[in-house]
Image (cartoon, rainbow, N blue to C red; front, top):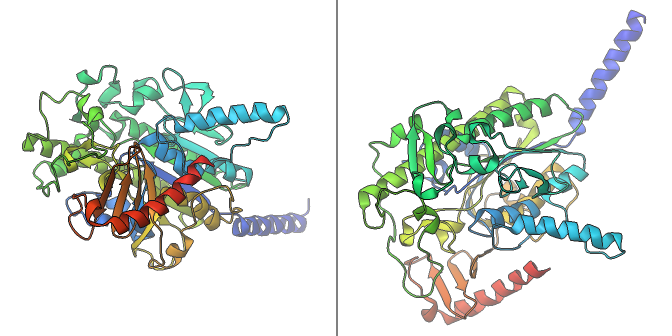
Amino acid sequence: MSRLLYTTLLLLTTCLTSAIAQTRSPNVLLICVDDLRPELGCYGKDYIQSPHIDSLASQGRLFERHYVQAPTCGASRFAMLTGRYGPSDNNAIFKRADAIAKSATAQSSGQSTAVPPSLPAWFRQHGYTTVSVGKVSHHPGGAGGKDWDDESQLEMPMSWDRHLLPAGPWQHPRGAMHGLAHGEIRNDASKMDVFQSAEGPDSIYPDGLIVDQALGQMDQLAADPSAPFLLAVGIIRPHLPFGSPAKYMQPYEDATLPAIPHPHRPQGHTTWHKSGEFNRYNRWGKNPNEDSEFATLVRKHYAACVSYADAMVGRVLDRLDQLGLRDDTIIVLWGDHGWHLGEHAVWGKHTLFEEALHSPLIISYDGIPRPGTASKSMVETIDLFPTLCGLADVPAPDFVHGVSVEPILKSPTAPGHPAVSYARATTIRDDQYRLVLHPGGDVELYDFAGDEAANVAAQHPDVVSQLTERLKARTRLRSH
């Protein structure tokens, strides 16, 4: 080959590669953090150390009022991954997998009962390589079976090119989910400490290994520029038990935490519960509702887990920068629900109070208008699916219940919409009120312009009536 021809071919190849890079859809990095309250520096909490998430917020749009569909992992992640209202229990995603299997059988016999594709399946159908690492669906790694590693029982069929969970010394995904330092696995929760702070590197807890593998996957995806990627990274902490490397506890040892707001059990019929998940663990005979020093220790260990999770987020974002991918990637940080730390005398999730349904949401991408300006507009988790499609120039799905929040990304004061959630009851949150309707007819109404812990349903029958109609109209979508 002559030097002239070689030079010409090299120039053409370079131009073609450049053209592909300019026209290719952006990558998507979805970071899911378990049980994360909006108790971060970027949410105005100066006693929390969260520099990496705070930095992401300064470059994107933080949503001050993002609400999840359900105060439990499986149902909330179902909503995020499908863009639809759905079941309220932790088997929600597996129920969808069963429906897919039944649909395939029905279609083979000439019937039409197709299940709408998930977010990763939709992106995969439109040219994306899709990879999940860690806890993205309900089970870390996305499989079922006794130890959550049975590849014949997938939570998300036809969704991921690769779905991964590096168990390391925790042996399997079930072990990693509730793992404490150096491979300790939860078998009998009463013999596992509710919190722990062990000396050692990040890798002595499962999230260190999850992020190690996520970085390797990012390297692999970056090495193949032929297709954009959707990489979902699921960080387990601060999920119970509250274990993190000791270096993340150190800043909180002598910290002064604010008082717990409305710490008493509410009166009447509510979704209050006895904090069963928390109380399963070894608490050394102590009750945080009765022992303020113990309550503070629990809160500090939760905070340490938040800082550990923040450091893991930082490692993922640093690698994105090292690979030169930040400007070509849409970044989402999403908390799957909130968590009570003593509010309403609850230590856990699974309620329809504000603390269990309010979680962080940050979206960042190159060119976002007014980066770092937070929005007070209300949004729901189901809005993520259509939003990401719009940002990535993927065809808009007509099967989701959510709406794109692109107008709020363009202008942080653009209007949002009320948020619907469900557990043992159903609830709707608008700018001022939260209405909760119970199956037996009991009603709760909370006014966030006043005492947000007082049920004022009897004083505002007109508000109850109006919100009831809006809630019923929205919840009817769950059956379609």
